[in-house]
Length: 307
Image 1: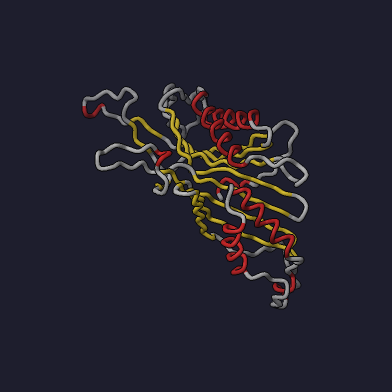
Image 2: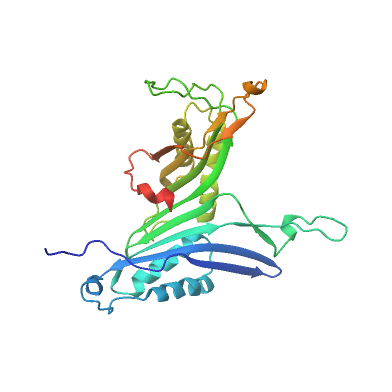
């Protein structure tokens, strides 16, 4: 039976590059995990094994490190744009480049002298600790003319210890869950948002500011929403980002419901007044949805929140 070649791509995945910028005695760290995927005129290498159009994946790895030196790393988005533009514009057989980046954040460690006088964080210049919060993500795609930038975060764990309820749901003969009028709401936020910057003719967003503001609005909505369902909270988080950031047209969430169940303490003669919970890690409810600016068509792939 005859066969034909379908969609294909190749590249070097998970290039770990750490860039230390030394501004006198003050150092700054950018720590990225960069994956490159290239596609284009690659039929021959699959059909006959001819490598005439193949840029070695080792070269893509070297380019990542060289660009960290040549261009620096202002932001994950800007670094990915430099890489994508280079691969498409410098290699005729390559028609499309996709750059996926995870960014690991670091914060300065305050130190003390012999008199235990602590130095403010802004005075400490070269000691860092990895932040234990979210992992920042971005995907940059370029076809020689048009850009698509999808950024986001994952594994940002948040909790409301009150101001959450869950009741009035459908019940059948298999339902055992009791209605809750004061519950813990906890989730690990994974989100991906699409920028409406698609052309070099447009004004480029401030990537660092946009990320921090999108995260801020998500968290503020989580805090300020009296939640009757995790779906309601998700929608409020997405709406706050879309309404507050004009450069973002679409945001997709994947929110596991990290269940916290009240422990029955009556066998021990104790009353549990919403104080002691069992934190269950699985199974868990999984709530996923996309929030869009009115009139915008959805384009974020479902799997983008799992980069």
